[in-house]
Image 1 (cartoon, rainbow, N blue to C red):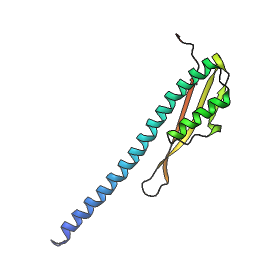
Image 2 (cartoon, helix red, strand yellow):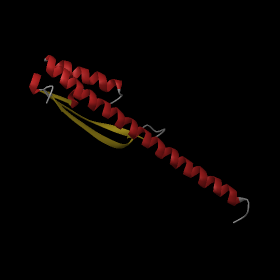
Image 3 (tube, rainbow, N blue to C red):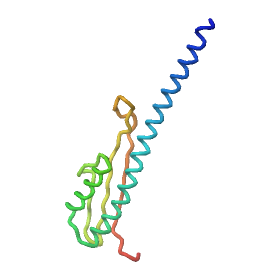
Image 4 (cartoon, rainbow, N blue to C red):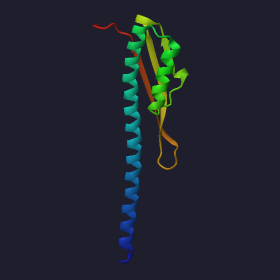
Length: 126
């Protein structure tokens, strides 16, 4: 190995490791972003079930409120992902959906994460 090729090899290895680090950083960032937004959706779901149970809201309205919040959080929730059972004090809502964790630059899913939430109405004080 000549003296001139060694610095080039070191630069190439450093460049490759930098690309790998950027790749993993991006995947981690996307995963954390989706997980945080899912947590916010779960908190909102519990809140909306309490309010809808107290105010006797219809299932269609509950579903619409959840869809609007999911859209605000950039989560791929559709109407068929939401199950609303009962009403008032027997209200029970579940949401299940999958999110693709995407590759950088290519915008293709590398990993699919499944999320599921269940919320039931609880009388205040219990």
